[in-house]
Amino acid sequence: MVSENEKQKSHVIRCKDLSYDIDHLPATSVIICFHNEAWSVLIRTIRSVLDRSPSKLISEIILVDDFSDKEHLGQQLDDYAAGFDGKIKIVRAKKREGLIRARLLGFEVASGPVVTYLDSHCEVSKLKHKLLMEERRGS
Image 1 (tube, rainbow, N blue to C red):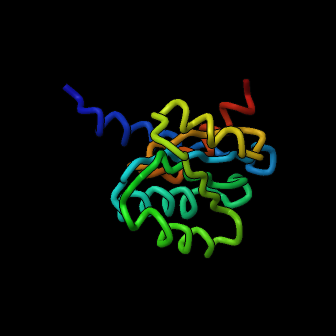
Image 2 (cartoon, one colour):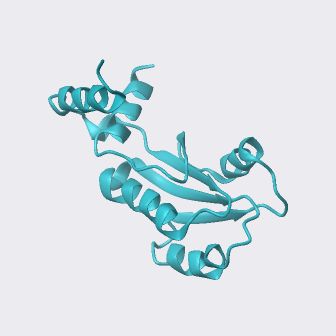
């Protein structure tokens, strides 16, 4: 039986042969909700979006803090986000909201024509964003 990992590798290999006209793909607001996420995991997710997506396709990254109480998710995260000239915005829930309401908090401040929701503990592949936007453009 083929593992999911092998299926994914095969899909990525086939996608590498495709070309994408990024000048005609819409930009997106990426919304990442989290609650007490580990620093390294959250930063790895953010960096994967920024490093593996064409910058013109990322309107902004909106981090929605669902009432975390970990110290590193306070001022340290604010300072980190400030280093990106407004590309990273932080929305903080006033009480624990849960995933769906936290996503809606992010949606309320999103400015991009497309919204992409990511888990706070994932990494974006180089092709994933282009594939998503190409599918969006075609629909």
